[in-house]
Image (cartoon, each protein chain N blue to C red):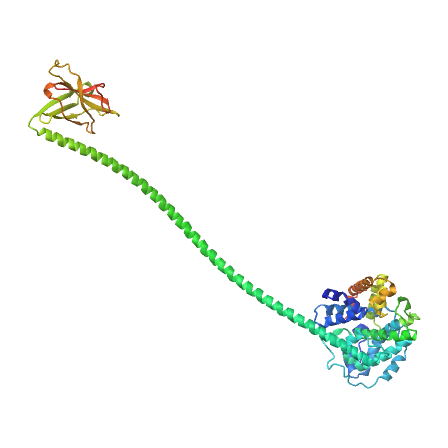
Amino acid sequence: MELPPQQTVSTIDPLLIAKIAKGDQQAFSHLYDQSSTLLFTLAVRILGDRNEAAALLQELYLEIWRKVARYDVSRGTPIAWLVALTRSRAIARLPSLALKGHGKTGAIDDREEPTSPDQTSDAFETDADRERRALVKKAVAELPEAQQQVLELAYYGGLSYQEIAARRSEPIGTIKTQISLGLSTLKTALRPCWGPS
Amino acid sequence: MDHEQLQETIPLYAVGALERQERQALETHLLSGCSTCPTTLKEYRATVGLLPYALPSIPLPPDFKAGLMTALPPTTPDPAAPKTAARTRLEPGPWLQHIIPPPPSWIPYPAVAMVSLLLLAGTAWYTFSVRSQVLGEAQQRRQVESTLQAEQTRITALQKQVTGQERVLSKLREDVTGKIGTLNQLRDALTNREAELEQLHAQLKLRDQGSAALRRTLAQYEELLALLQAPRVTVLSLAGLERGKSAGATLFYDADSKKAFLYAFNLPPLPAGKAYQLWAVVTFPSQPKGDGAPISTGTFSTDTGRKGLLAIKNFPDPSRITKLTVSLEPEGGRPQPTGDIYLTGPR
């Protein structure tokens, strides 16, 4: 199987998933090429550890290989499904990592930055993907800092609004409002990036 | 929570910041068939799914893919997977697993199964309750709509009746107006007839009066005729003076009955309130002839032919009458002559 040269991460063909469900390893290879960098970045951001993130992705891709037929095309794009799957699996690992004493909590300052500019390059990333990345970065950067922080604590840290309020020593209502306002702003700004549903 | 409160929790749910109880309440609501919340959630999920793009990219080690591809086991049918890949309804499955992470490995599986079973039972009961409530409300709504439709039909029928009654009333009003007009015409006609009747009564009264006068005149002529037929009749003549030169009169006297009858002619028409009065100068044996005072014998009027009649009872014997005069006097007469003399005699 061959993919068009400009196939973007966000436009992974749902038919690719169907082929993987039938045991097509080449289709699985293409899916990996298009998604692995984004999913690994996310896993590292949540777990704060590359080795843990790599182990997570090993298990995740094997699970995708076995259970890819559970993907529901009506619920969203394939990449959205993979991102949600990666996040939920990574968040689920946080308590055990905390017990081991080397887990990250998702605080904004805890993120692991790339060690060199070359690490940010992705051979499979298209111009459309780069534009999308720039747009999302800009939209997030334009949010008030408090909204950025509570969104990161919720999404990358897996914390509930009550836990965020306790951590930041702020009223629960304030945290709920900040999350709602931040996401509402992003929803408006990123609507062109939603892609085919 | 009501629908508005549930809607407010959708962003928190999408980013994974909702508490367990609220998460379960929203998932139950999403399964109940809400028409708006699933769409809203889909939009927020699409937004949240873009957040990793804001992170600096970190690629996997180059040899990672080779190890993964080697570790791929032969594919076997997934017993939990649906037969068709595309599902069109929101139903619990892998997506709930995405949102509710599987329990860590240190939690015993039976406990998880028991908790899941209880959650499932609770969700099913809640769904059943909501569905029953929705069905009950739908039935009530249908009943209300049916009642409303019946009321509208009844109102329409009443409006038709009112319109018909108004039409009948309008026609009756027109009829009454016509009848009133006819009645007014009849009243006017009756008034005219009454006026005509009054005129006829007046004319009849005048004719009755004329008839009475004619009857009296006729009676006088009959009396005159009878007197003229008597065997001893004395006739005396009177001649007109300066004020009535063409006038004259004749007096017929019956010695047997001592009645006299004066017939005057060509007398001037009487002014209003005036009458002619006949005077007789009678000489008694004890007094010299010609010295007697005038005695009134009666008054009379004239008709349209300027003729006048006067019947007199107990008239003095003509042999003792020295003079007869007729003067113009006020109506009803006077004891003595006061007015102008029109006739005098006998000649």
